[in-house]
Amino acid sequence: MISKSEPGHSRKSFLVLPSRGTLSRETMERIRGRGFRARFQYFAKWAGPLKVIFFLSALVGLSYLSILQLKQLFFATSYFELKKIELEGARALKRDEVVKLAGVSPSMNILLLDKDAIRSRLLLHPGISSVQVNLDGLYTLKIVISERVPVMYLKGKVNFFEVAEDGIILGVSDQAVKDLPIITGFPGLENKIGESIGNVDGFQEAKVWIKSLDGKILKNISELNFSNLENPYIFLVSGEKVIPRSLEDFTTRYNFLCALLDNLRKNKVEPDYLDFRAPNEIVVKPRKTKRNL
Image (cartoon, rainbow, N blue to C red):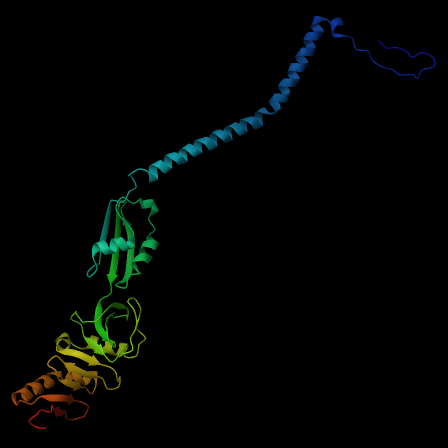
């Protein structure tokens, strides 16, 4: 119903809605239907995002469970455990020593093996020059090492330094217990095990002599002295001192030297030294005795 304003009052128009009690039942049903549809549309608007959230939550939950299952499979079962460790190339070194230094053991998980770390740990040992680490199949770890071989003793002021061909010190002791050539003339050596003396004067020259001399000759030499690199000298096992002209000359005339020594012994001459430096002769200095003093 529209009411008209009375005279003297401002003219305002307003709509007077009928009260619910005056509405018909059919009209009320329509109103309720419109309200339900409005609420349904409101919730339907959020259905899509809610579905996505629910799907992602389910996906995260399933992924977490899958990760737990995979972790259980890979790290908490014996399926990926190391079964065997093979070692090749060990001669002087013992197997237990090498395996312990490598930091590996059976039952370790192969997925946690760091081959570079194993190689680095093994190369810390002065007696090992190279290392290869590989998995042979799924359950076998194969370690192949190359050992440094001692080739000489360098005699310092007090100690004997056991040295490999590349100059790495493999051991230091107060006695020369191994059957190795003894090189003297290095009183200032104070290096430690694992350090290199490859740049020490005389080492390279001594190595050339050792590698060039025949094993039979080396067997009869007790000491090579390189205190003077231009004029090294040799002590034979039998006690004689020999001053060679050169490495090549000593090798060439070694058999003649042996024959000369035999002849001197037959004549009961004990030489103090034999000097081969003269071009065409050998100077023999007899050892002084009480009889010829």
